[in-house]
Image (tube, rainbow, N blue to C red; front, side):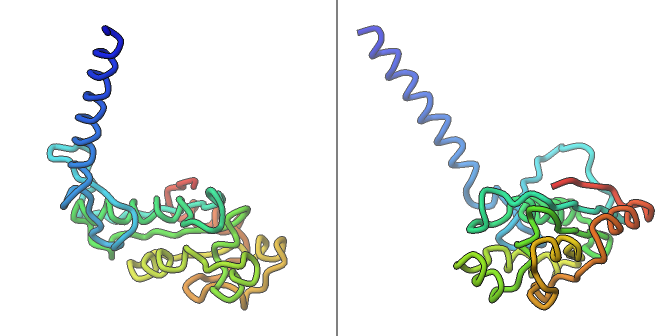
Length: 185
């Protein structure tokens, strides 16, 4: 009897906590100020370490992880959208964000256009819309030319929103020398 009362109480607490979490995930809690539908952010009142809207921010996102498979949105791209949305929610104009993504290694296939991706994976590329949204927000998206070659892809198979870089190696060095903060994905 005691066990069932304790079990019921624990279950009730879980429902209460779950209900509070559900309420927090509704109507206006999550925002997408710059990249609609991707990279949700919530700005807590009184949060510290907010970016200065008058400053310019430079970040180089080193995207190598393929995520849980090529049939799902790459979590690194969603995280980059969250970075853009975080700065936008803090009032930083998109023109003050100098963000670059370099795609290489196991993540390389996410850079393919729809036709090439479908030929390789027999499904649509789930990353095209977020890449397009990132580009519209001013994010430069590059793919490593060497990684394309390693995987036997041709530059003509790359999404038109993505530029082919000489190499991720050169992009990483050049942009860090220009003061970009390195963010590994």
